Amino acid sequence: MNKLLQINDSLPLTCSRRGTCCHGNQVFLNPWELRRLATERQLEVRDFSAQFCDWNGIRLKFDGLKDQRNKKSCNLYIPNVGCSMHEARPLACRLFPLGRQVQEGKSTYLFQGNQFPCLDGCSEVNQLPFLTVENYLEGQKVTEFEQAQDAYLELMQNLADVACMLFFDTGLAQSGDTKTRELWRRMGGEDVALLVDRIGENWFQMLIHPSISFDPINSSTFVHDHEMLLIEKIQDHINQLTTFPEISDFSIEIMACALLIGKTIGADVKALAEMWSELKA
Ligand code: SF4
Image (cartoon, rainbow, N blue to C red; front, side, top):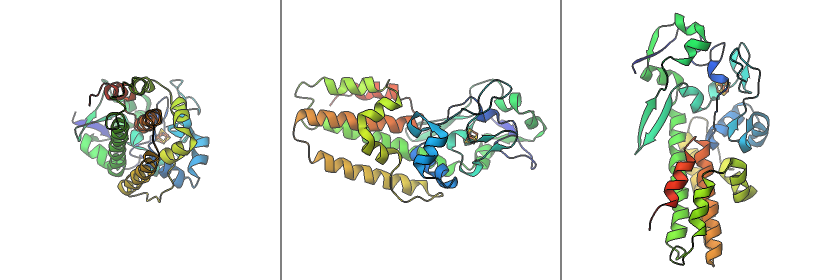
C-alpha cells in the first residue's frame, strides 16, 4: 500500500464534513485516551463516560443521528461539522480506515477492502492530492496515542503474568486446582459488565479511572504511573493471601483486570484467554 488518501489545505485531514469514519463504528478507549477526552471536554472522567460512552465507559457511544447509509454517528460527532473532539480523538479514529497490529514489538498497518471508505461517503477526497501511509500517519499525529496503546498492551501482559505467577508459583497448580484456569478461559468470552462485576468497583476505578496526574502530551508517564499504582495494590493484596481459595480468587480477579485492559485496546481477549489458560508451568 503506497498511495492512500488525498488532502488539501481547505479540508481537515481526518474528519470530513460527512464523517464516514464517525458512523457505525466501534471505538474503544484505553484509560489514557479516556482521560484525554474527558480533560479536553473539561469533565470528570466518570461524567464523560456517563455522557459519551457505553460498555462501562470503555467504548464511545454511537447513538447519534443516522447518515445516508443508515448508520448512527458517534455521540461526539456534530452533523455537517465533524468531530467535536478533533484534537483529543483516540487512536482508532486517527488510524481509520487502517488497522494496526503489534507482534513481538513490531507494528504493522493493515487495510482490508478494495476501496478507501472515505471515497464512498466523503466525496470531497476525490479532489485531493495523494498521501503515503507514512504521511497519513504523520498528519494524524499518532505517536503519543500509539505509545499509550503499546504501553497498555504491555501492562495487560504484565497483569496476566501476575495471575499466572499466583497460579504456578504458589503451589496452587500443584494442589490439583482446575477451577482457576477454567475461569480464565471462560472470562475471555464474558462481556465487560460481567468482568467489572468480577473485579468490583474499587479495582475497576483503579484500572479505568486511576487517580494519577495526567499530561496530555506524555502518555508514557501516565501508563507507567498507572502500572506502578496497580502493582503496589496487587502486592499489598498478595501479602494478605493465606489459603489456596484466596489465591485462586485473586488470580481470577487479576486475569479479569488483564482482559478488561485488553478490551480497552481492542485486543482479541477471547484468543488471549485461551492462550493463557493453556500455559504450562
Ligand atoms: S471521536 Fe471524533 S473522530 Fe472519533 S468517531 Fe467520534 S466524532 Fe468521529
